[in-house]
Image 1 (cartoon, one colour):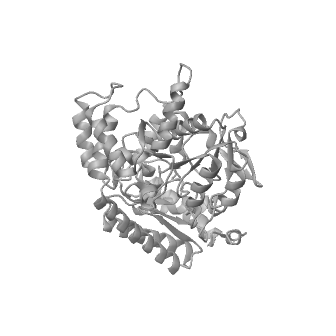
Image 2: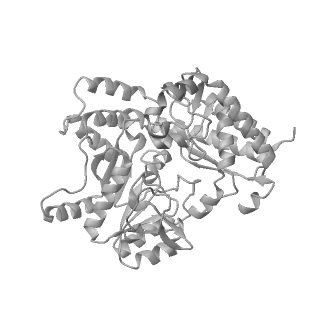
Image 3: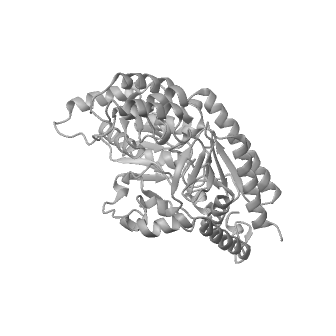
Length: 462
């Protein structure tokens, strides 16, 4: 059905000529509205590789980047004086809003006490207690990014099982962990072609299956060389894919039966509710990972071992030869992280805030669906707690292959720029929108109206 939407004259149900004209108009409108940013970038961006301080920034679809002057709550202002309702929120890094007041206060207080010591504090002990209260009974470690946390979790799984491979799902995302950059081609695991500078054959250390395919998972685990299943509860980085009924229970039972660990990466699905998808849906992973917004925007990730897994780790670790374990980084578990982590867990990541986020996201998803239906667009909307995504293809999607086919870069680029010109910012890599505790109903209603305005331009006859 997805293939039927693209032809010589249509893309995602839109006439190609209309889409191209809209994209050209919106790109010119954007460029005209931000002359200060264009001038500053032309004069100062040359010091950076490819003109950006981190190469992902080059993936934004607008003609040139804005330069941010200030972000507060769920609003962002650039140096050209343009104010945006921010639904990207740092691609989940600021899911609880920009500089939540409790976190800002914690930063100011800790800044006068030192930034890093490689020693714990009383705040660290309290944060550990609250991590357990929020996410369940795990034995915790602190990292700086979820990529690091996933990398360390994988190392633990291999150490405990003595097995080389991890099982990941086609189209999933776990940061920049090399082992996860595998995909399926004609049902066979291959090293993903886009991984720059990769010299090792990743199929020796990873196997790829389709999400929601328990039979495929069973077949892979039966070979006896898989140390762990590493999964997101919901596929979030390539057109959201929800788990089918029984999928997660099946993963748990199969992993136990075949002696593999189950690692749950909640870095995006922390949007699901208090404690993430794992707590909301009573999942039972051996290792739990979460990052991005867990400390209110301060670079922080946490990973935890279930008590039984922790006991196994302690035993294996005691017997290893002297030398580096390959886990940990100097600046991780610093006191500033703990100050922000504690403030977020205690005062920001609250039932009240999640209720506000959930209600706002439902309001947004209903409004987007209504607009899609009114314009008879062959698209659909998916929501996971505070996270909403419109997908320019019919749904629901079942796996990574279907998600890749549903991706429509030309359409998404045009919509993104059109929304920017109307005052709303959404995530650049996919059509993702987050509702934060700071997001107002009027911001949500404006986004719905702006989305409808864009669809009117794309689908309705003049």
